[in-house]
Length: 444
Image 1 (spheres, rainbow, N blue to C red):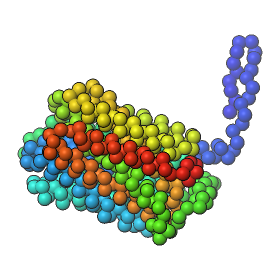
Image 2 (cartoon, helix red, strand yellow; image 1 turned 180 degrees about the vertical axis):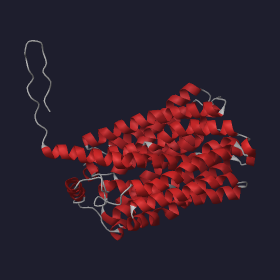
Image 3 (spheres, helix red, strand yellow; image 1 turned 30 degrees about the horizontal axis):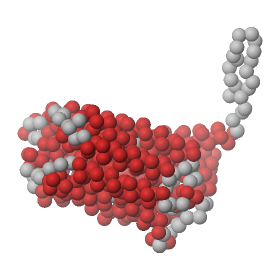
Image 4 (tube, one colour; image 1 turned 90 degrees about the vertical axis):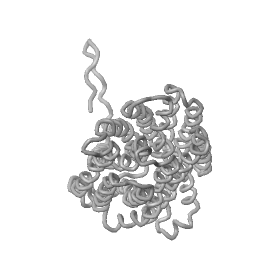
């Protein structure tokens, strides 16, 4: 591409160096792959995340309507992750056998139907059962999507792509929190149903629609992508093969003997503790500062997620540009810990709480996104499918512990601070564990 003529007296610019043909091909292929796959997966994850955490908004009405204590709410919110843990590994291995398109589509339809069935819950027992089944249904989506992205993007491009994908979490908060608040306020009592029942029903419908669309939008592999030319398929397949050439465990048996797998599980556990402590209790923390009205709580709860979208994508680009992985997780984890501590220390100041909840959200969700550049740099082959599933399943047990612990501490002390302090301590432990990983193993 030539620069335009500049200056006023006939002075012309020197032609810019010609971009090598292989770079032109590379750019064209990855732009095409990105637009065909990533926006749809982001949409699916927004739907998934909203269906698992909208219980945080339902709590504001359902708790009084059904007489659930903080402990019952926290336990039910966490039981989702027991189902998630049990079915995570078999789900990912099934995806390898039947293909990403079929598995992701079936998974979404199943969890959409289950999420809609929450309108029927009446007792703590029915609440626990439905949350467990919803976790079992959603268990295959997130690790399956991370694995699916490794089929299309090599390691040196993966941090920014995963950061964009995980942007679905704050996007779900940005749009989902005000939407949930509005639905619950506007529909309460309509046709004899409570606002929280309408919220579950209306927010479950997109999962069924998107799950059906997945059968037509996604492809199982590069060879089956009719939207790529033969030359583009050859180039992309060579890129993925070259990425797989780095010595890494490839079998599930070798994986389980790898100490780094279990270190990754612990690191992700620490990150997920912070992530779900934030998302499940954000509306409650905002309400505690004195904010009134469901819609107002929803709008203010969206602000920290806006900050998180910006932070996680800037850090994802920085990580790929520098090919540095560890400190791009350590620094956000420390920032999130600081955010939790300060926000909890000023429980009646809306302004201070929002500023530091924004710091906590930006830090912990950046960790959630950039963490996956660590294990996907160490695993390939069948080990990648099994390893991602094991790490995700074990790590997400923190989703059971985090809301349950915070609910228990709040019931026991009638204060929110102690739970937030515990989350900060766990995040700092996670940051230290990341520091122990040799940089040469992951910085590529």
